[in-house]
Structure formats: C-alpha cells, structure tokens
Length: 315
Image (cartoon, rainbow, N blue to C red; front, side):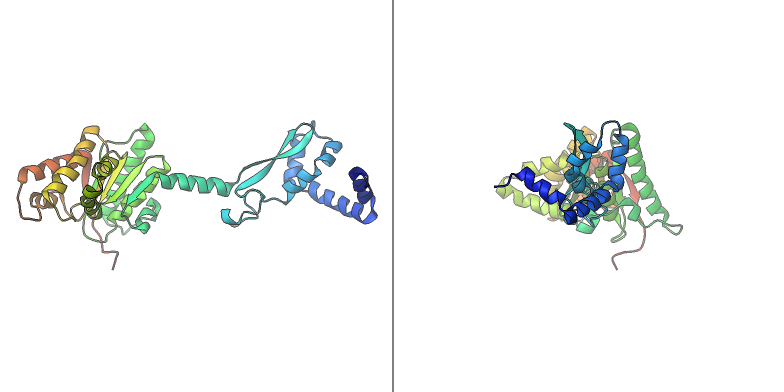
C-alpha cells in the first residue's frame, strides 16, 4: 500500500490539481477576515504556518460571519448552528474557535427577556406590546400622555437609582382604550432591565384560585403572585366578588405587597370610588364597608390612580 504521505504528494504534484490548489489558496488568502487576522499577527505567522493551517483558513473563509449568509438562526450555514469561527494561534498553527454569532446572542437575549415575564391568562398581543408602539402624536389625548409619562417616570427612577419605586400605577377608564396594552409594554421594558414581572388577568385568575382549593395549590399560587418583583393586575374589579376572594385572596396579596413596599400596577374600568363600591357588595348581596375600605387603603398604598380616556380601539 502506498504511504499516505507519498499519495498526497503525488496528487498535489499533479498539474491540474496544483493549479486548482493555487487558485484556491489565492481565494482563501483574499478573504478580508483572514487578511485582517494576518495583519494583526504579522510577527507570529509565516508561510509554513499558513500552509499547514490552510484547511482551517478554508473553513473560516467559507463560513458565515456576522450572519451575512444566514437569514435567521434556524437557517444558519455554519458547521455549528448559532456559532461563527474565530481565528486563533495555538501550537504554531492557525486554528479555529467557534463563538456565538449575533443571531444566537439576539435569540438568547430574547429568551432571557421572555423568561423575566410570567403571564397568567393574558392575550398574546398584549404580552408582545412595546412602549414605542403606543400611539402618541400631537392629537393624542392628554390622559394617554399622562399614563405614558407615569410609566416612563417609573422606568427612569429604576434606571437612576437601581431600585424599583414603591408604588405602581392604577390605570382606569372605559373598555378598549389600551390599558392592558400599556401594562404589557411596561412589563417588556422591565424585562429588558432584568426585572421579573408577573402579569395577571384577574377574573380568570380568581376562577382558577377557586379550583385550586381542590388540588391543594391555593397557597402556592397566592404566594407566587404576591411575591412578584413587580405585579400587574389586569381588569381589576371585573370579577364577580365574593367575601372570600376579596378578603382571603386579594386582601392577602395586597397586604403583603403593601407591607413589603412592592410596586403593583392595575388596570380597571372603575375609578377608586367605583371600585370601593364594587368591593363593598358581594355577589350574594352582602355588604361590608369596612373590609372594602381596607382593600382600597392597600391599593392606594401600592399605586397612584390615573384616568385614561380615548376611543374604543377594539371596534
């Protein structure tokens, strides 16, 4: 059997192959990334090292860099999905190390951001909202500007102090004017800052809580919500109120957040006065003014109310 070394020499020395080899070497060496690398390491690299490393240089030259040959992460052209080659010098050779590409980093950041938001029964479009998508122009309602300014102030305070403000915002107004959308947008802005936010659609949450008595997950679910770094309660006051949900569920959550000075955001169709009346009467017709006021005191301690006006955008 012909030794492998001799066989390679014979093939390389063949006229046609040698010509193709030379053309390929010129093409490889003309790669801008390789030229930049060789320029930066001119004192370390010689022709022999280049020849012995030509396979690695070819791999580098044919790969996608900065995702320039890929439409997205799922269509990555490189050997390792989501990674691009980087040239390094090791043991007198030019070798390749694979590092995360821009698409991979973007995807990881997106996943990390998404993991900072827990959504319970909230619509997908609301949870994908962004503050820059909120419709603001010279004709915008003054109340909409006020609400956005309040959320901006909340974010600015966190950015400046590194601590969350102790109070959120209670946004109230008619159906379909974008109250929930603003909550979703704020949740995403907080997630970008590494702040864990739980967004809860209250009517459905309370229905789930009632069922949790049977499967013995009641305390676990209440603890999960009440201890959120930032809690957002959507459509507060739309639920059918019972003395138990008011006092043992909502009261427990709000008492904890008031005591721990944790910011809470609300959306509601009801003003503070209207909400107090709603909390006063249970679905059975029982009346308890004192307990309703107690709940309202906690809401006022963890949030500031702002009225949002505008046209119904769901029509």
